[in-house]
Structures are given as C-alpha cells and as structure tokens.
Image (tube, rainbow, N blue to C red; front, side, top):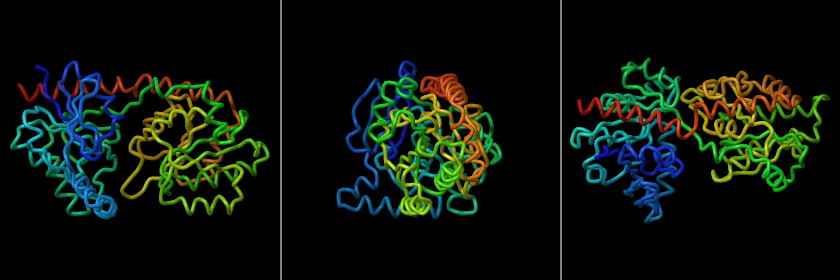
Length: 397
C-alpha cells in the first residue's frame, strides 16, 4: 500500500498547489485538507477533504471578514497567524506523514500538539529567510521552538531559508531544499496573444512595456519604480512616448501611488490595471518586454522566493530587481539586480535593458532555461518525492 500523506492547508488551500503533488500519487496516497468552501472531492488522484476553520464558521454569522481583518492586524503586530482549523484529530487518523504550513501559523501549532496522539511524521514548509525573525516577541518564540521540537523535517523554499534554520540551531539533516515551481506549459512565450492583450490596455505593438506585478506597497519598491520612470522619460536617449509602465496589483499604497503619478506627470506613461486573476497572469507577462519588482527588505521580512519572478522568467522576460532576500538565488543571471531602495540604480538598470533589444532577448532566454532546469512543477515534485521517502524511511526503520 502507498504511504498516506496529508497536506494540511486549511483556509490557505490553493488549487494551484495541487500541480506540485499530482506526480507523487503513483508513490503516495496524497490527501489535501482544505477549509475553502466547495473544494472537497477528488481531482487527479488527490483526495481533498473539507474541514471547518474559525473564519468559515464566523462567515455564517457575517463575522468572518471582521475576524480576518483583526487576524491580519494580530499577525502584523505579533507575527502569528491566528486562524484555527477544526476536526483535525478525526480527519488525520491513519496518516503516516502530515505536511503543514510555516511555523508561525496556529494551524501548525495545532498539528504539533496532535502529533504525539496520532503518531504521524510532521513536516513544515519554511519560507522564512531571516534568522530569529520576531524572536523578540515571547509568544512567537515559545510557539516557534515548541513547533521546531516536534518537527521531523523542514521543506525550505530556498537555500537562504535553509541557512536561516541552521543558524537557529536546526539539524541540517532535517532540512530539505524543495523550492517552488511553475507550470512551464502555461507560463511560456505566447507571441500570438501579445498584441491581443496590448490592445486591451491601449498599448501599441512598438511600445516598450515594463511590467510590475505585486502588492502595491512600499516594500515591493513600487514608489522607486515610479521615480525611476520619471528619470527615464527625462532621458534624451529614451523615447518617452513609447515607454509604458504597467502596474498590476492592489494594496494599501494605491492612494499614495496615484498621487505620486499625478505629481510627477506620469499619467501618460504609467498604467494601473489593478488586480489580475492568477489565471490571466501568464497573459499579462506576455504583453511585456521587461519584468520588474524592485523589492525592499524590512525589519521582519525580505523577499522569500518571489513566484512572480519564476513566472516572468518562464515567459522569457528579462528581470530587473534588487539584491533582497532570495531574489538573487532565483533570478541569478537572468536579469539585472541593483541595491534596494535606490531609484537611481533602478533607473540605470531599466535604461540598460530598455535600450538593448538583444540583451532583453538573451536574458529572457536564460531565464526560461533556468526555470526549465530548476523550477518546474515536476522538478519540485521530484525534490519532494525524495524527501518524503527519506523521512518515511527513517520512520519505518
């Protein structure tokens, strides 16, 4: 019989993640535990079991959104996601291995508490790449090290996340760098749809389109992008009429961003298109010439992987970004990386890419090749297959 593995996501379930686990169903009996309404059932040999969570129950009395807002404030202030999932003890009977989300979720704490009773191996996904992040907060510190002491393995999303764990004293033999991947057949160059999507946003075929996809907030460097754009249109070497910066995303900085765009007179060069569903992101990438997300590190956060970089690279788009967090590890030589929070070096990097079609093409090709070699869904699936076998092997020995 195939070993039974539960991927517990609760309210954080994403159908996109299923693609990483579908190739594993020939070796493991994979079940997802979801709290997202309407997701229960079976798809591509993966069983999805629906269980209630606190916000789900509060939704029934119109208080779910209030809880999510309060939970967001609590998470920002304390560093712990307070979402609780119910019926886990009954649902997880008979599973040999359980994979959970990061250590700083109440869901992971719940699973660590249940481990002794149910006897499963417990694995946590680990995105955090800042050592001892929020350890100055006692509630985080106590919860974190309780969870750590009950984990059999960590699936680190990057080498930097692994290095962070080692600094915190985690045994290196428990850490597997599995990474994260994209569907290279969905995210690929699509010349046939390039003009169609440009037309949707009133972009001409010969415009130079610089694309930003992300939360509209300071930590994503969107204001530095605006300042760099002003420099670009003032540069005599750049055809300012053809330069278009497209910003896809929503966030708390929208009002201030709109004010800055107006103040700098960039209404004709900067196009804000709001939130784009993930099912259309590959099409947005394909209407662009360059992708940029000039992320800025903060006290408790720096870019942990940046799935959007992989998506852009898979579509053969050159990247202009920053030396922040795990970005260099992902992008490597598929773009130009500059110091964060510096609109001048960002301007210079964008100018270099915009002015050189040959460089854009070569960096784009390097990026797609890099994704195909290291960051496809199938590559990540194989990383997890090897890790699961080793973890379960230790369990059965």
